[in-house]
Amino acid sequence: MDLLLESGRAPSDVLVITTGEPHPWAAHELSFGEASYWAQHDARDDVFYADAAVADRAASRPVVVVAVNGGSDAAAATALPLALTRAGALLIVCGDPQQINSVLGAGV
Image 1 (cartoon, rainbow, N blue to C red):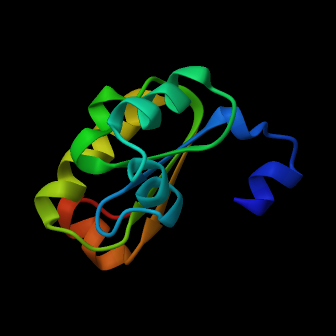
Image 2: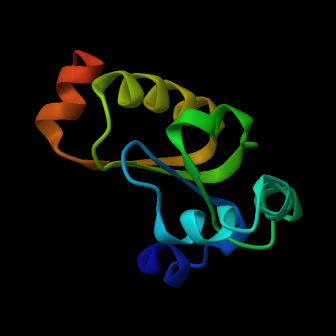
């Protein structure tokens, strides 16, 4: 994330999707309720972190980062194509290359 921001990307340009454990920011914000959490998404003031299970609700952003950080292969298989449709300019996939290749059925 630091490299993206240091390269000139605005925080509001970035959507991060996790397939396993939620990002600590998302877990914290969800503790205030779904309405507050999604209001921050709609405000587009900062990086937004979403679990793969609800990522289809997230709007497109110039940069989408997918953290394949656990979860089922099905979660990754759903998140990766969705992320591609949400990424306006740049898609970054982080995780175990073997798992990612297995899920996609291709070499990345």
